[in-house]
Length: 153
Picture (cartoon, rainbow, N blue to C red):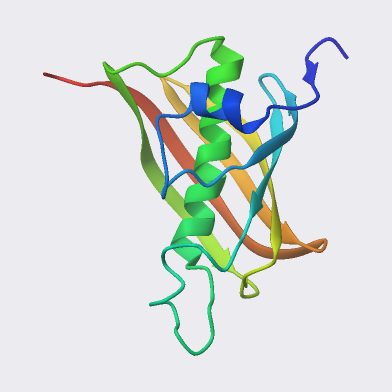
């Protein structure tokens, strides 16, 4: 298994994603199979900045942020597969989100396992299938497309 990378800690994640607090949504990478699949973790804490407003009486992680966490895991997989890192001259954008489904709420104290697989790469557009689980139960899933674009300054 020469393509298997067992883990990435937060320091290496920060080298491969331009996101920073409060928008970095991947805490650890458990495994990467280059060109194929990534499994990562998002630890959900009560300190997350959206919980006071979503919802004050019953904190629930917004579904769009779960999909964003899947997309960040996808970006890590892509950058590692391409053996590159983001620069100030480019951004890895969403090109599309299809079939997003939210199955169960995610609460403070949960640990989300993010699994993203590359479905195909065509003309610079990467297509992925992502699944988020908590305690082995699917909480969200989505098909995503992303593209690396040059920033025009």
